[in-house]
Length: 185
Length: 185
DNA sequence: GGACTCATGTAAGCTGTTACATGATTTC
DNA sequence: GAAATCATGTAACAGCTTACATGAGTCC
Image 1 (cartoon, rainbow over the protein chains, first blue to last red):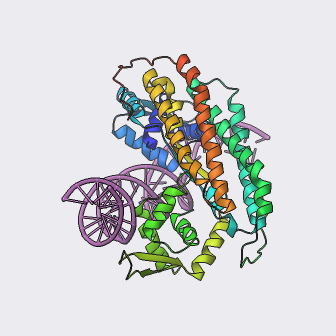
Image 2: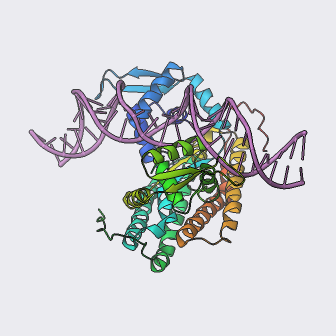
């Protein structure tokens, strides 16, 4: 699924600026889809050329010059069609697991640091997801949040459970130069 | 992390052809990183230009013309450095969760189909991962397989647990045209 | 002899990121 | 008045996928 399609979907929830859409990505879709301004603004522009959205420049108010986008009938129809037609799937690219795959080539201290950082990262994501449950959501959105929490928890707990054994069984790789380990921020 | 770095890593396990590397991706890294021939062969070519790998054409044997790649000292050093320097992280792009996010816009039958297909997909991946545990692996590789199994299981079980409630609470979206649902393959 | 697996590679192009460039408004 | 947030956009280019093109060897 392209970003364009997703932008269309987010406009189903109400008119929004490019900035607003970026916020939604960061707040609600963060754990399963990212997007940058450099792709959002061009996507919106293209969608307008294709007639899927319309935009108007705000004149009064606090922020004159703001460009508010809204979905057209055509855009709505197109979105539903795309949704129905997309196969449920996932793309995962885990640098963490790559690191683990080659853990026998890492120094023990480095391996330990990677495990700890990843655990912290999962904890961090859980701390962001948790409070989202207090808000009102559609059943589907709630599903995505709870799904995210379940999966992050499984990942974090897996690290917690296997960390010590992995480290105690670990041997220093040959030719390791014992460089100082970069400090955790 | 770039594909080039990963190819270097796979060559740490022994000399290999581009084809072999593709096989490794499909067999062992499948659940956390994909790669196509169209990216593997150019990556290998570049790595050779950079002096990180060397290649020789097989002359005798069953497959003359096979190009076997091997890591150079420089390539090894570069790989270790890259590994040590990469932050443990993940990139997720889940079309499934996008679908769920907008589930209120899907017809009940379509939603049901998406959930079932995703569950089947997770089951499928579990069936591939399970037998990998019977083979001998480094502790790190075993970690990635078991991690994958834990996570896939959590995802599949989440769907199983929430499927019925989501479907029974679900309302047909307005203006749904009740098109026939594409049959499952 | 047909199907499948092994094996290599290129070209076009899609999709997105990073970094840059700018400026108004709000909060402290 | 400084910092943070709100707000829009572009240009360069990275990185990968898809589809194409080809051919030998193996299994049944």
